[in-house]
Length: 148
Image (cartoon, rainbow, N blue to C red; front, side, top):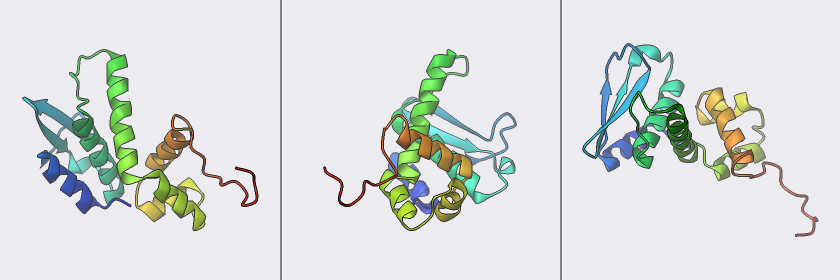
């Protein structure tokens, strides 16, 4: 489970500047200039720490994957970059093994997993879809006596 302090560590490790400022047009934005990254978070947009943590992880994902784009970029490029940032955030904050372990402990519903990991339910649902869809991983274990 990734804590906010670990995300701050990711920022430091990658040399990413973080600014808490009113943006006006979005809850967050990432810019890249000459190989350096800055993330802007608009604290007014967040009603709680869960959402801010998920958004920060997503924005770090843009930096970690190098997937930034101009506002005027074609929609297909924007969608690819958003997907890669989401994938990074999911793998950082909700690794498959951690989700599987939480499910073994009895946390099966998305809202329960959101509470357990202290993340928004929407983020958990996106992670479940990512792991069971594109990654083709299962959250149900085969019976112990099944042939392998």
